[in-house]
Image (cartoon, rainbow, N blue to C red; front, side):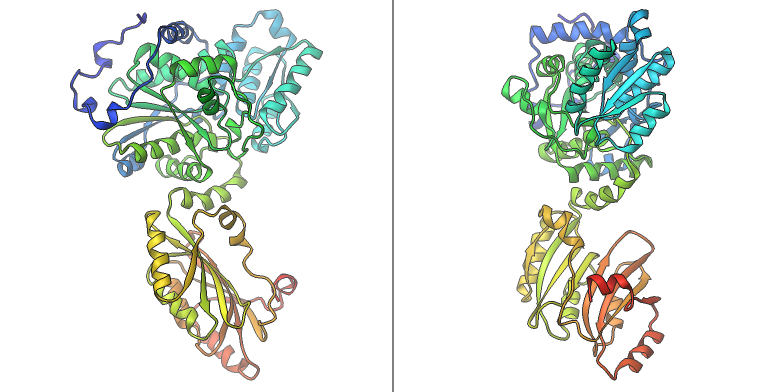
Length: 541
């Protein structure tokens, strides 16, 4: 029997509407064994006595109103990205270090980290006035490296992942007599992270159906699961990992810890090849379920949180939100209360371009096609008329063949199945096409590489045009083009700005220059001729 019984206000009524039995509720929860109950009870005491608030703050549990309306469920964000180091990690680091003997602190501490734990250790060392050596993978974002150095940590860069840095840190620990502060596989660290769950249950005493927690090495989910299962065992605890860094998911499935050969580095905060012994023991006993998400879904979740909070999460910080969206869709949930722990916001600014690009795919709001059209006058315009008022997100074309043209086009969609209907419509009108929406090569590389030199592009002049970015503006631009001049190159990408920007190659026959120049003067769009640009000469002409 657990030692803690929640007060009546914290428990749902036996037959409340929020907990009415529906098909979704019949999915089996993890049966917490007697061993699991002992683990939860042991950690309950540790969490309640954890020392974290000398450096950490109690973060908000904030409704994501826009996302909640869209999903038909109440989504709450536990804003650990608002901690002084923009991550939950300082809770566990400080709780561990604050309980070290004075002579151990005097000798100094060392840790291995992809960045967030490093900042927690560095800040804790500054507060406790001790030396801190921080071993970080060379792949760590510069933002995190600079933040650790600014807090007084001695940064050592080694290896490509956390696991590589960890092995090097152990060597330095032995050589210099330092105390190792593990980022996740330590009961004091786990207990410090468990205070996140303590705050969630205190801040929302009404029904909670599930809490979604990102997993790297497992420290956060172990602390959260232990506390929740000790206090409110009816609340599901769901772990989240990425497809290319899913060591905990594989380990639980195998019944033993599994070491990954490689890990994906987009979500660097969860890029761990081997989960901890203690975290595996706790998670295996207490975590109800796991969700695996892909990069596009994480990018879309970063966008969702920005739209609701105007805050930008790092990839690891958005895993919980991505998982909620996937879980709601998979299990057709409605009217539930779901919590995502937004566990970090240490995002390199230069990653935002990639996130914005891939968010549309994560939301399944953009479809990509390779379309073949006859290389004859008027076919390009006929194809554009077929697109109609649908928003064009990208258009790439380069003349390459006498008979056919290959166009790379992106279109805004509301649902993934729309792409199939659009493809059928293209085919029906005689435009052969290939749906590239789920093609990683197309999304990551080919869309930026359409073009090159062409022997057919004789008498070509190159122009950059700008036009007001609004629905139908691209079609109006094309309609304004003189039908007597052939378009030999076309590139357009919707960047979300007030003005659209197009690069156009136009073949103007000798003798038509005067008429063409008059056309440019009467055109209502600003333009710059780039025919003599050396980049054009080198790569496209």
